[in-house]
Image (cartoon, rainbow, N blue to C red; front, side, top):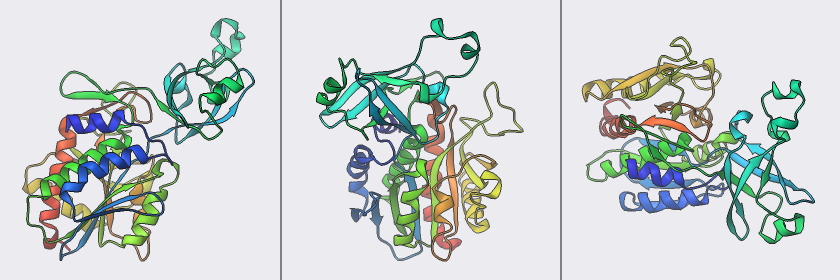
Length: 348
């Protein structure tokens, strides 16, 4: 799992530009499925055929990033944020600018604090006041490097090990979900299962759950599990009343998110996962959140409604370039999905 999450996290693919991640999923899933296709939206749909209920596993491939909106006369790049950034985390970051001629490095800059007015120094920096410096002489030089309006930009970060089985890197939201889905399909490949499984790498989750909506409509599965990340409360600045979750304590089964505005999980799906975890002595946590949503929000409202929930990895500092998770939680999640698929006929 460490090698898999490292490979996925170090790759680049912001919303709308998920091709690199889709290629990795294609390579990793190919030995374990009967057929594979990419739909019109760009979702990867890998199918293992069976006779029983159909189960959709959805893991979004995209990461939050930036997009070039303007090249000024001096060759500096103005950008918009793609997905939910907290602007101060962008300041002074190294980035990769994915030009028409290949990736080039850059840095995010802004006016130095030395020349700011005292009141301005007290305010957190905003993305509208930042720019990307690629070392260009002028606008023409930047264009010769292959930069155009619409060029995607991602963070220049690679996975590093921390102590006690933890790792840090970018885009664990949601390359963690992709790694879990791949590992579950690997485990299931050696087993006799009675269900049809759709392993779906969805696109554009971070900008509106778009790929989940279209793929779920096309597949119309009987049950769905979105695999994603969520916020733990085990670090300074967080209280247990805000999040009772911990890293390293198992996968997180969602009861409701966004205070019910996202998904209120189907009780039978929650029962299925909870009882499977307990029967197989797999660590798990349950969560009611009041923050963001996941692909499950779009999936469970598709067609006549699809019974769904979310299985998440508690991940510190999500939507930043330095997310932190515990590798044991990845394994707990993939093991729970594997055992749940094997027992699905007992519940549906």
